[in-house]
Length: 83
View 1 (cartoon, rainbow, N blue to C red):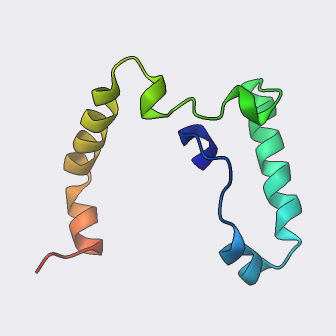
View 2 (cartoon, rainbow, N blue to C red):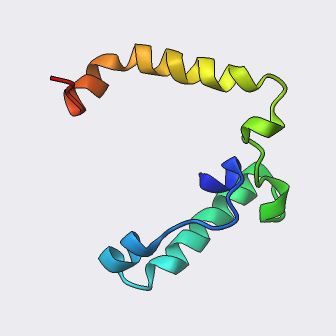
């Protein structure tokens, strides 16, 4: 979720073209459900929570991404071949 990374806005135009304006209600309901399940009262309660600037060890995220790439290399290279 972009908001967890600190975004103030997110781009939704693609889904609106595909699913029409009614998709906004679905997005809002999904966000509300997620916030309720996590006990958040407002967007500002979690905006930026997963930002590199807000974690104790900023390099932990980079290490986790590196490990994820190693663990999923086969699927990644099938989808995005280098040769």
